[in-house]
Image 1 (cartoon, helix red, strand yellow):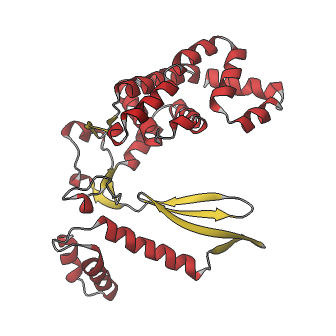
Image 2: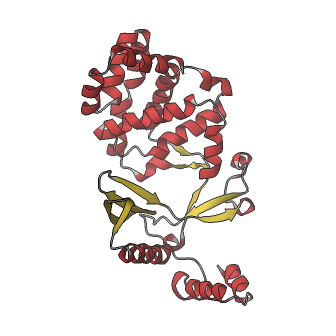
Image 3: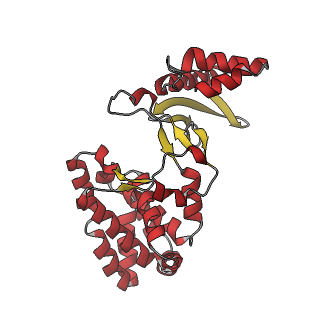
Length: 297
């Protein structure tokens, strides 16, 4: 942060000087490196102060008061809303950096088609000499453009796979980013016409990719293929996920032959028990439309 502090020091504006004092006094170490835990603690204090000022409650709708709770998990600052409707909102702080400041391998630079990337203050589990000043690189904007640049079946398939993950308790370690990464690799490996296939074709193929990678215990990070994202898990955890998905591709292929079989399989594999019971009460026409969409979109 040395260059930032120098620029702030030369600016006479009072608010800029306050920012310089904050950074220099609370957020950096002796070498002017931004310290992850100090930044996170400062942000936590801001969230707590803001919620205290409104007594941890908010009236989003006249006469309906919702209570708020604040927690942190990894880099995310999460506010839980309790009331007539219960939900949570994640805030993930990021430091935007110019594209020329990238840390990508040369080959991956061709996919960095935005003017910036971001550094996320995520604490590392393994302590090293630089762990306190290490940030996680994030290319969310680029990834979003890549996913939006192909047929919507790509994004729909991601939703189905995440839904399957949420239904299966032994897939709790299968992070959404693992699934997203498989699709990023597929986008650069296949022509755009691939995503115009029906979901009944794409889903078995992508589940096959997931099972294959879990079986090998490797999901390469898209932006630096030398990094294996599954290294954060134990062999037992990876094996458990593999056993859960290894038969799904063949079952989807087989179920896709018959509309009735596909309907039953979708209910069993992609729905919670309550959702299955609710779906059984739906009209047969609605169920036919859902399956038709799976086969044709």
